[in-house]
Each structure stands twice: as C-alpha cells, then as structure tokens.
Length: 276
Image (cartoon, rainbow, N blue to C red; front, side):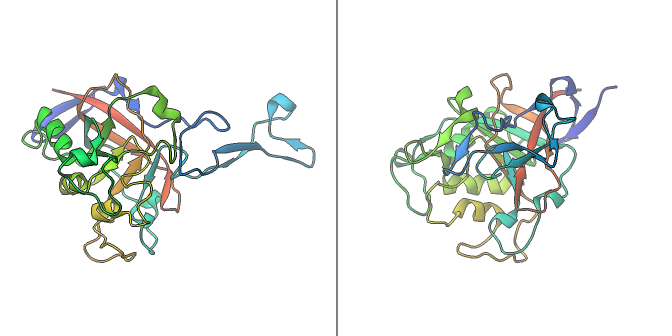
C-alpha cells in the first residue's frame, strides 16, 4: 500500500522502498569516528559466576556491556539540555514520525576567504560552511518558494569521502563547522539540523558553543532556559549521507532512544518522495 504526504500544498508519494539510514554504523572495538580524543566505543562480554555472555565461548546467549560517549563516538542527536542546566531529555522530545526535510551538499571554504564571521577565536584557515554556500544550494532546490514548510535540514559536505565514517578529528585534522551567518540562516527556517561533521561549533571555541546557543535561542554565556528558548529543536551530528542520495526534498524519520540525557546515539532515515 502506497503512503502519501502533503508538503507545501502538493501531494507526494513516500518512496519507502528507497528509505536510507544516514547514521554511521558504530563498530564497537573496531574502526569508528572519533572527536575530541575520547576513548573509543567498546563492547565487553558480561561474565562471572559460571556465566559468559558469548556463544562462541560456550555461553548460552550473547550479552555485552556497551561503553560510549554519544557526542564523540558517532551519529548522535542533541537536545537543548546540551547547553543549559535544566533537564530536557532528548528521548522525551515529541519528534514526528515523519517530517519534511531538505538535503543540501556544500563545499566548505577557508573562513578568511569568505566575508562571514564566527565567534570566538576565528582563524583565517578555519574550514567553514557558509551562509552563501547554503543559499546557493537552497536556490538549486527552489526553496522556500515550493518547499517552504520543511522543518529539517541535512548538510552534506564535499568532498564526501567514505573515510568520514571512521575519521578521527583532532588537532591535526580539525572538523569543519558553521559560520555564525550560516547558523542564523538555518535557525530562521529549520527546527532540526543534521550535519556530517562532529559539531556545529569550532572544536576549540573556548567553551562558548555560540552556534548551538544561536540555534536554540540561548544567550551567549547563559545556561538557563527562558521563554524564548527553542526547546523542541534538535541537532544531529556525525551523519554520513551516501552518494546515492541526491540533493532535494525527503521525509525524515529521526529515531532516538528513550534516554534521559542531553544526547543519545540516533538513526536518522531519509525517505525519498516523488510528486503524486
């Protein structure tokens, strides 16, 4: 049975047969992405008092203890609780089963070669996603004239190497991030942002997280919710979008476990749509 969705006053069929996860598969104790030098994600077999949770070692079943840092070990989704004192668990957000979404590909540039800004600690050689690049990509998919009700944005950076799925980001290979101008544009139109790099902010930003604060409408230097805070919004980082998915319009199913934390491993799924 075909499923349909209405977007921007137009009816689309959901191409569920081509739905694609853009989560990076997390290989415990194997090659995996890493940010900020945290320990790799690990899986440890539960054993003791005559029990071993490994069928290959004679156990009756497989049972493991998983250890990971969601913010740094792979695809994860954050709530506003990432930057405030109050508890807003990411696993309790009222995420729709399906929401309208745009996928855009952009090529980062050196901050010093753009006319845009970032705060704090901007350096000319910083690699950034700019407002200009996003606007050019938006124009190519005719936004917002036809797709003005999109609630989510996925940013794919170019080149789109497969190695992103196990890239280690450190001082020698710092990740790209958004300019302040780019984040201002995103926060004007979208409630859910997904990116294929580890953070929307610079890796060493003096702890300011200025882009996170701009997106969630939290004042610089504040860690308090107020009436202007955008509590329903999410940021998903370290996705990987395969080359088979073209820029344009999708339905997004953002799967987040019921964790009572500010961030959790997640599985975003993009569902292609076609005009009915």
